Length: 158
Image: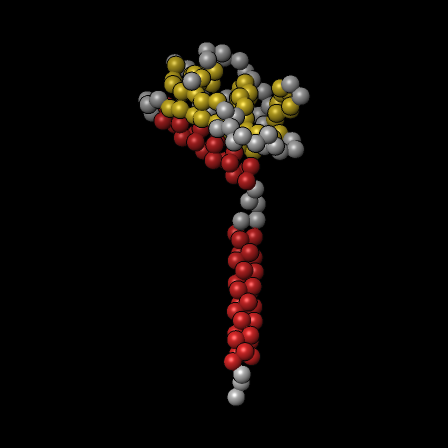
């Protein structure tokens, strides 16, 4: 016959081992199915999907809006970048580059370097507050109303 204290301690050890095993399995499954999860990249991708969605709605005759929120952290910055027809350029001390093409817009983030992975070429050029410059950079904390003005998309700051 076992003493009550021995039974409780062996049960507790079994529970601890089971919880540890389940935790390891969850961690391994997460790493298997989300090996490239990186918060700045995920946020930039989300912003870019929103940009594409809003431009699509403008293309269909509606108005759109795009907001690049400021997360309040100085160590991670996001940018809406319009490359127009150039593949790369310097903006102050920052270097932005894309794969090139026409009417390229990206949502980029700055960690240690500027990373512009989420880009696309759009059917029409972008104009920002009636400025049709080939290159435009907007840091987080901006809000735009988007409309179609003839042969370009007009982004008006709010």
